[in-house]
Every structure is written in C-alpha cells, then in structure tokens.
Length: 156
Image (cartoon, rainbow, N blue to C red; front, side, top):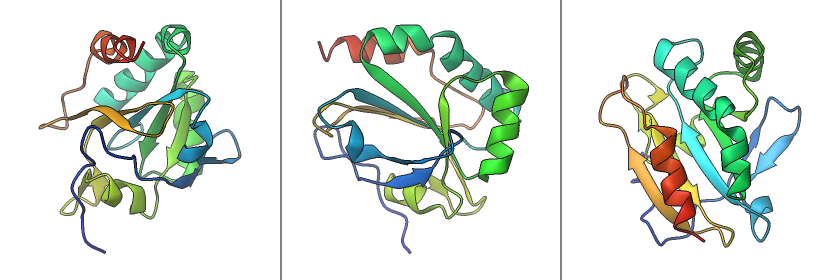
C-alpha cells in the first residue's frame, strides 16, 4: 500500500476503526455530530517524548473536554503494549493501536524506513472535517497543548 499525503485542512478526515485501550473499537465517524477529535499520532510507547506528550494530554484532559474535544493517541504499538504504557504512566486518554499501519499511511504520517508513525496532530471537527494539522519535522519535538487548545477554541 502506498503512503498517502496528509489530509488537507478543510477536507474530510479519512475514516477509520481501530482497537483501543478501553477494550472496544473506536471509529472516527462515530464522533460526527457529537464532538471534536484531536488525533495525536505518536511514534512509540515508553519513549521519553511520547511519554511526556501523553502525560501532558492527561494533565489537560479537562481543558480538552471543556472545548468539546476528545484526544485519541494513535501509535503502531500493540494493544497490550499500549495498555501497559497507559497503566505505567496513568494516562487518561484513549490510546489506539494502528498495528497494521493502515491509518498512519492514510494520514501520511508513516515513516516507511522505520515502520512507525511520525508525530502529528489533526483536529477533526464535529462534521468530520480536518480543521488543523501539524506534522512534526523531528521525532523529538511535540506541540504544546496550549497551541492545540488555541486551535480548538477557534472552532467556537
């Protein structure tokens, strides 16, 4: 399967269904009409920047909820690995396993040489449209939640 380019701002977010650490499959389109979604692709569980990133989302979970947004962390790790990562770090956001790398491909985040996802963020509004995106140029960098929250505030 070819690596695709990230969806443009203003375009429909590619739909997907992935297994989650909550023990159920999560389908992006299920959020339509109910809330905004922050898709946070991260390279690998248990790495320093990814741990800090998911812990930051946990710390600010109420701020995201206050803006009617659900944060979904997505990595190529397996569900057992993600559950262990979540438990070890008391992460309160749902983590999704893109073990087959299909969603990372569709969102243009897959790094084929490493076979993992780059760090990337997509805000999908209640209509299923991408309203903001940011793809990190280096794996060791992450967005500050204040930036993501400011983008969510623009949705009104």
